[in-house]
Image 1 (spheres, helix red, strand yellow):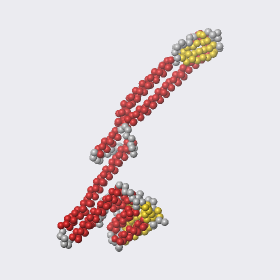
Image 2 (cartoon, one colour):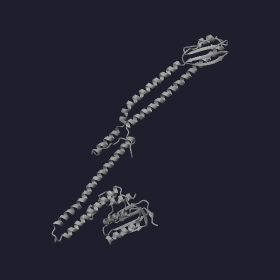
Image 3 (cartoon, helix red, strand yellow):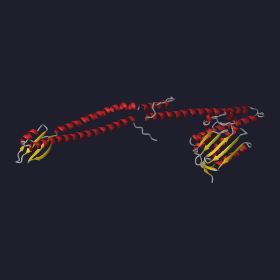
Image 4 (spheres, one colour):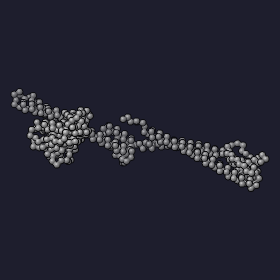
Length: 420
């Protein structure tokens, strides 16, 4: 996305002035046309009145010369051409006039209305409107600079806050008084973005610190056992025990590093292989693996054969993680059931279950409900976070659902089709 970063103040000011200029031009044209039309109607009214009076006077027997004298005024002139060709009354010699002629009883009556004064008034009106319009544009332009600066002050506040946060001053927020306006919605979205970023930063720092703490324990153990093994005599009876401890701690550190690498790959958008995977066959393979590790453990798979397009190795990792967690939670005498249906699969057990308040938190990284037991078993607290990341990478979802007995982990996958 390439955001155009032109000056918002300049854009608003130019836009307002352009609109004002267009409005003033339209207003000047409208006033000029209205004034001209009204003046023309007034002149026509004067000529009609004079014409009516001339007709009435002539029909009543008044002498044409007297009619011309009485009707001729400052802005109106009347001439009457008699049947013998003589003309009484004086016609204007110069200026702008509107003329009207009518025959009355053989006399040709001509009326002249002076329009020069109206033209001059119209010209003065145009100049006045032009001066006032330009003055209004100049004053408006000066006021816009102040008004726009005040109106865009919240954007300056956002800029200052962003610069302060970039400089390391965390925790600042805009806290808009209203969120139903354009700037209010922008400020609320800005605060929400800061909450998300700072929350992500805090989680990342906490995760790095926890991961370093988790790695320190096995690495310290490896270092201590290795030093003891180096210093122990060749014929010492404890060398085998120390070698076993060294291998165990090294494997523990290796598993944690593998889990951290898997999470990093998921966060970076790891490209998974896509192929048809039979979920029921995957569940049966997991049952066989578990029975090989713990022959007496009660675990079964049931359901219908369904196929999903995904990464079979990663989905097997999800299933193995859920089954191992269930087996550790229930103990050797527990029961685990894997049920496959047309939307995915569910792994349930008869163990102590997961408290309702913890059903979402257990998917956070480096979280253990039973810290001591998971440490003894080599668990890193990353298995469920990895499992959810893999399922979401397939477009699905992994949740811990309420169960009458024990815990139930539900995996929903898209585009699950029956195997024919």
